[in-house]
Length: 99
Image (cartoon, rainbow, N blue to C red; front, side, top):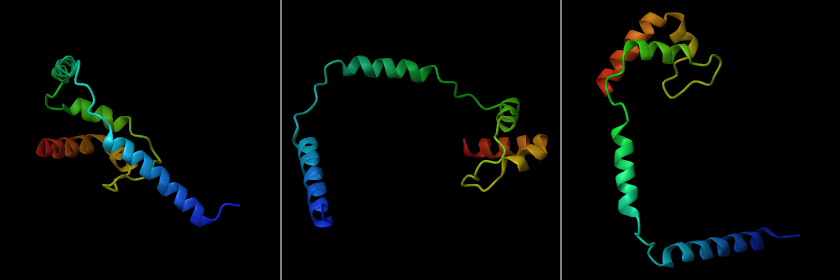
């Protein structure tokens, strides 16, 4: 039977070995990193950052799943779906202020 002291000691030893390896390894090679950065920048240029339309908001509200746990805002999907027109307008107003 492993005692808690032995378990804690072995766990601490494994963390020590892992951190020692991570912090003391050689710098990774930067070979090809410029190519990766260029590829990433072309991918981000393709992302649509235009303003969200009311139709997109309405579709998002329609696709909310009913019965899920509330998010940080404590708003239930059922509440938004009860009056989808009003919910779409209000959500759009909020996102326009934020973004």
